[in-house]
Length: 224
Image (cartoon, rainbow, N blue to C red):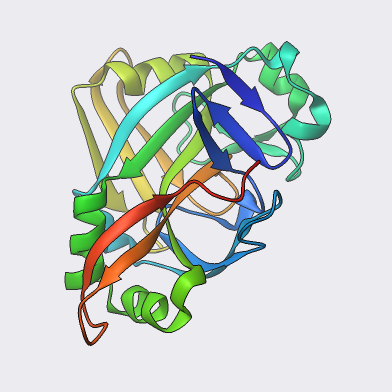
């Protein structure tokens, strides 16, 4: 599928993913969508859902090879230095546009499906749900993220039989462990600074008292 890295979005096939202030964003960060109908739309992060609520709900989705020679350095590094994961390195390391080219970094997507996302907000993440209810039309929560990995690490996640989510030792990071692949057991710590691009969800329909979410939808607007 066609890929394109631009200053404000990453395009994969027909879908565009936000890149604005991605360094502040983690999976299930929530906040206000700024410039909601403009090209520079981004999430102003208020907080994030406790990592313990994500266990059993976050999935590996896909890995994508990028022809970095076809992408501009200014667009790739728009949010500063890149963070990427390598084999046997739980914590992401810093890189650059040149690293992306020489190491043939790939983009790997993790996400939480709409059903589990809704259930989590209704049953567990009371603070996030209340924020979205109070914020109204511009309230958003991050449902999918893209992170950078070296090719061997991306392949390992793609071929692993099991991927499990756990809470890091400080409680701040979400750790994703892939086992059964070509390199035994490998773990990545998803933390601030590791997101390259992201997708958001918004509440489409509340119950009468806005105490429960009845329907959500992904946000594809404001990215052209």
